[in-house]
Length: 122
Image 1 (cartoon, helix red, strand yellow):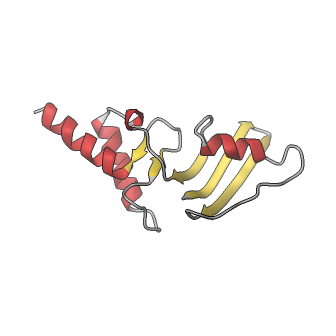
Image 2 (cartoon, rainbow, N blue to C red):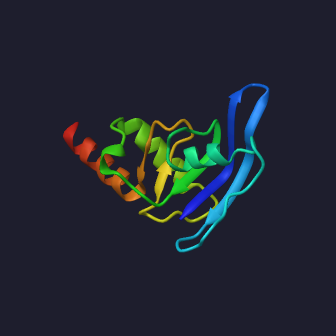
């Protein structure tokens, strides 16, 4: 599953490469990405594969690398709180990425890591 919620990507202040892009690609769907040169096709793929990060918006991709989890308990807690307030249901095994890309992982893994870090700090 791949979901984009009002994703914005800019390389400079004058040019929006992607402007409030929203899309939902379900597991098993076959999708073609077409467009003229400079339309943002490569940028969209770089965002999906986390080679780049959005300036604004939310990206959710079902995939997780365990080493991708953040270690700052305050940031993880705030991020999970924000996700819980989204107007759409998010699967526990979905990879979620903060808008600046500093926190990413599955919700389940982040909750587990947060609990572990909280136990370690006591």
